[in-house]
Image (cartoon, rainbow, N blue to C red):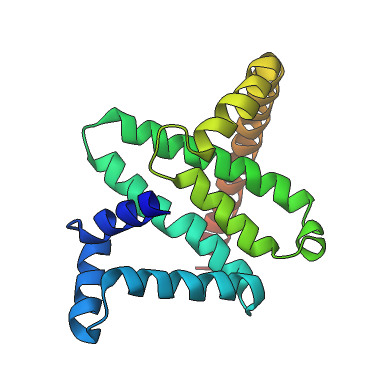
Length: 188
């Protein structure tokens, strides 16, 4: 617990959006940053466990911070942060698809939204072997490698059909535009 508290204290004292926000809160309230963080964490945990809008909060936690970090990673020249956040988004998307088909689980699992939020925080944790890295390497990559040929064939077929569809729609739009122009000229 002391190690966690030390890491939390360091992150609250760093320059940037989080550190600056907590510094401002500390100055305005007179309450130490660490206690404010624990208080906010407690409110979030209770809200996720019992509150209205827990699904929205869990999904916001899983999206907002990673999106912010992803934009920063894209704008930096370092490749490692790009890989970290791209891995997170692959796992996030994989989990979202599974969750869509197993949506009924949310009603059966006690504290589902709290569990989901904790899972997503584990996936985005700033460490080498966070949840996203483990799930990607142990689950997603082996599945992908096993089925890559089939996936490539399906994607090629889908691209071909999408291209054919787009060609037909474009031709239909041209025909309709030409017909409209003829009718307009005929009416004038």
